[in-house]
Image 1 (cartoon, rainbow, N blue to C red):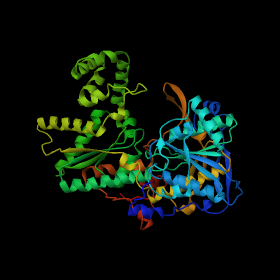
Image 2 (cartoon, rainbow, N blue to C red; image 1 turned 90 degrees about the horizontal axis):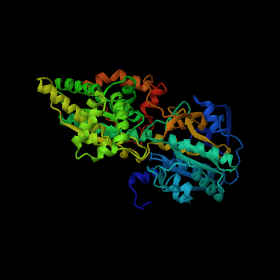
Image 3 (spheres, rainbow, N blue to C red; image 1 turned 60 degrees about the horizontal axis):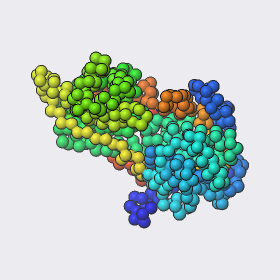
Image 4 (cartoon, one colour; image 1 turned 30 degrees about the vertical axis):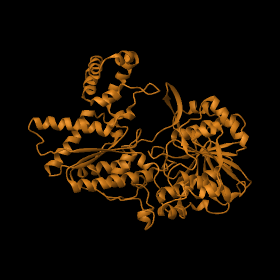
Length: 555
């Protein structure tokens, strides 16, 4: 790390994260609950994980006699960055050293690939101290390799045994924690002593359940985006002439968009899960947006803010149908299509092959998006992630408004749209106090699970809307969170992503207020993340978590 650091980083290095009461004392114990089982596919999952299936929930308690001998433990950062990862490592390090100063912690470099290749470095106090309460994963870097192929599992075992590791902590999202379960089962079967513990990370907020209340990084990322959205809301009111279309992270789930809506109260927020559940078509989405634009213009407000999750196209019924038909055609006619001289010929051919409705949907799309949909990724899928959803909506809304105005309607509308994408801006921000505390506690809890000798668990900390004194730390068996899904054409065990539930309190609060937010300027300006000051300003959890736990929120 550079020796030149900002004044804020210097101040943050001295911040002491809060811990649950059970983790503060010199002696720590664990309590085991009843045996567990996944919500579905029990027989299939038990067959795949016979040695780690059905393990009990673990609660960490104050006082106890966990082994205090010296250990060797590894840690790896897996997948995309999320604020607070360094504090997980710091908490892991501090807990291990508190139990025995001779314990050694090793960081595997550049993600799971470092475990497979045996690339690591010992993490000392000097290294750890320079990264406390900072964003990013640059201490040991990350990567997206998966430990699942037989050769990779064998290589990991060989490296872990050569290092004599007692434990390996995998910090990652749903796929990474699933990989942790696969590796834990494999090492158990092979008689390797290394215990494997996961830590729940993802800014998308979709790794949560009854026992994991939040994935770390979500709080900070949502606050970072909400600051930017609030700034844009203020700018829209100041310039009074722009409509801002903002695309946000969240391909599989709309938690980020929903949380940002709850924090800033923009005029329009599209929730992918609602659109899928109600079978709303692309045309209906555009009509709904246009209606709010027209209504606001009639009130003298030719400006506004719209939020859209990046994964929206995958949830729109007619887009999905069109993509399925398109994929079938590409499977047999891709070479022919590539041989056509120009784009207009490809469009003409496809419209003759697609069903009537799908042909109309495809024909309505801008040319650059039509081209994107003719590509396929390494898995043979249409790369919907490359669709700039905000640009798509701007183009379609513009077309619809021009059509209305050509018929003497919507004459008050002056539509000047601007598109934005907020993604990487939120992944490596300085963690909020909440994420700094939560992540440090997760690392501390992971250390106790390694000391307790359990494997195939994800560390958890609960009661997060309460004072940290009341937080409860422990571990949940990964097999309990698994279900079977089709991946690459075959049933595969994975942790089920938590999508926005339409009967949840956060969504119901949003749905009850969005009509008034649409026409009025009900904007909230959250401003930048605050690290110093009243707890209500600096330490509060997300609005999503507050509503889920029954905390009252004002609209």
